Image (cartoon, rainbow, N blue to C red):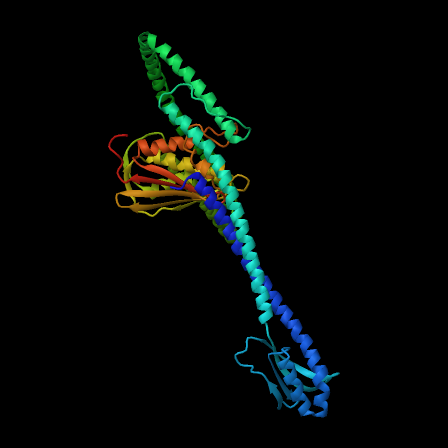
Length: 504
């Protein structure tokens, strides 16, 4: 394992090496780009000179002078090769090899004014530019290597000073661990290491004083132990009484939660029953009035065939309305009766999971309608459990209410999906919402008793704690949550198809 000094020096070398590599790559790219641009400008200048020198010769068709001039330009080193063609593309003169040359080639028209007399193909050597670029790169490399060596040397000196002070601290700690009392180390200076050394000296003095006090206290240890045992016995008795009271309080809180859920169901069902019963009363009253009026017309023999037919049709519609309203009321009452009986007891029985959850969702419907929360039941038929439907209703109901109160803050309701999947001898039940989600810190605490994000706003912080206790202690399963901010929450409940014979 590398020491701190080696790590500091290694870090400095790596950082400077990366910086050197970046500088060299950037310099290479800049120099190459400058070479290309300079060569292009040189090509334009050379094209202008060739047009001025060869244009008149091409106009006069002086082939000897053209050949002589091109040879002179190549021999003088201005160009690597030169090839001259007339306006029809026929080659008039060619000096120097174009193939295999490392020069940059150009092709330009030879003109006088706006008239083109021919075309020149020529190459300009870049040997000098490459040498200059290589010289610049070597200079940059030497400069970077010098800077790297200087930085590494400086870092070695700094690391040596740091590790020397840290070594003194380690030696003092070893002496203290060996039992030496009141160890002191040098704490000169005003930097962080000096402050650490001062704190170490203070700690050593405090530990030495505590050690002396401990030695003095050991003289009366027997009496202290007897008094401590007596106090422990008293505290144990007090804690047992407190634990018994806490168990009673927990049972009372669970019952209170059940009663609160039933109260919410009663209020919702009562509100929902007003509509069908009111419709039934109104329709029945209208039907009675219609029958009385029709009877009077029949007695007076003033009723016509069409009037009697209209009366019978209206009566049939009103009777149908009464029937539908009373059927809706009966359906609500029956579902409430089943849920209420289950929620008020922990009676064990066999049941179909979808039937129980369908009754629960139907009972929650009136209350959820006011908050514009939709509950979608995706549980298939045929998942039969031998368990406790009442506590299971309480668990799912608490999760629905939790989503309604916490997940859809700042928006008009949302969607809650309840799904289930049979996994061998167990069932995986999921309650998922599309609300605002939770952070990782919040997920770690939501099952704690009395933890709530709406303290003072009606939240008790007991709902999810009771849910977890019911699932683990009565249903023999476990619950987990998966969520992320802005992506909703999903509570996964895994319970056996057959509940344990005795609560855990």
